[in-house]
Amino acid sequence: MRVYADNAATTRMRDSALKAYVETAQKFYGNPSSLYTVGQEAKSLLEDCRAEVAAVLGAQPKEITFTSGGSEADNQAILSAAHWGKLKGKTKIISSAIEHHAVLHTLNKLKKEGFEIVLLPVGSDGIVRLADLERELDDKVCLVSVMFANNEIGTLQPVEEIGKLCRERKVLFHTDAVQAVGHTAVDVGKIGCDYLALSAHKFGGPKGVGALYVRQGAPLYPLIEGGAQERGKRAGTENLPAVRAMAVALREAADTLPETERKVSALRDRLIEGLEKIPHCALNGDREKRLAGNVSFCFEGIEGESLLLLLDDRGISASSGSACTSGSLDPSHVLLAIGRVHDVAHGSLRLTLSADNTDEEIDYIIEQVPAVVQYLRNMSPVWRDLQEGKRKYIL
Ligand SMILES: *Cc1c(COP(=O)(O)O)cnc(C)c1O
Image (cartoon, rainbow, N blue to C red):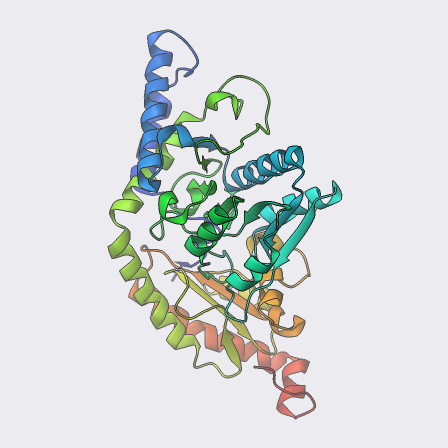
């Protein structure tokens, strides 16, 4: 059996999106900046897509800028707010310890340029505390950037409460909603954010396209200079087939959202209950405030990488920590932030489900993971020490 359970890394393109992609590439090949009919038809389709994306998010079309994906959207939001902050003499940015590297590495760059960066801790539940944010919100702050949902442990952050605090203090608020859009209800008005990043390939659209919502009036500066596309905020001939496929995928995701969330969270709950029976393991992240498709565990006495490879041999595609950290030996910053010690953080497994997964696939994972964990533990010197009482169990 082949089971794809790594939907937080990327998703299979929806059939509707693939069809829209091909059709657009074939029929709307004109350059939207060209003045003749073929160009203007492409321009008109581009604006229809903008309206569609805006409608799903509760935004106005002119508040949507198309980008090459989530990373670019995060970079542009943060660097724009920072640039504006510098002009106003506000050089403090508050974010969280569990952000995606697209946010954390951008903040690191700003730190080297003299910005004060405060990363809020999270509780063992993987959620930031509003009191911690409130304490840091002083008149030096230009931006708060806290993600909507975490990509490794699936935890949902209190973005509406954060948005309210930021509005009261007149501080810009960016949320990386890449894991949330298309998977749970996202409304920019309810969140009260100034910036929101999304990426098509996380909800059944193509790779290499995304969008940044920018509230009307919030500062926005281009990262890429050139032509006047995207109202002068993002140069480069628009990737219309990808934008159209994204809009189609997002519309389909939005229209089927409640039933998908219900179906996927039922699969998730059954998988969690099945894997929880493995001795000396722990679920990562809050049990309730998490994405419908996210299952993340730490197993004591094993290496997540070996677990992944053996699961792959058995046809299961999963992940250990985030895809971006694989290849590095550092344990996930997210697992460390929720208090997992290094050894335990190394034994992590993330399974992220979609509506394509079936009950049979969940049964198969529930059968295979305990067997592979046991196999690895039997070979592990750490596990032997634990069993012989030479080391104390942590989980
Ligand atoms: C995938 C992801 C990104 C990056 O999006 P790309 O479109 O792959 O650049 C950013 N943030 C989060 C939370 C993600 O999961």
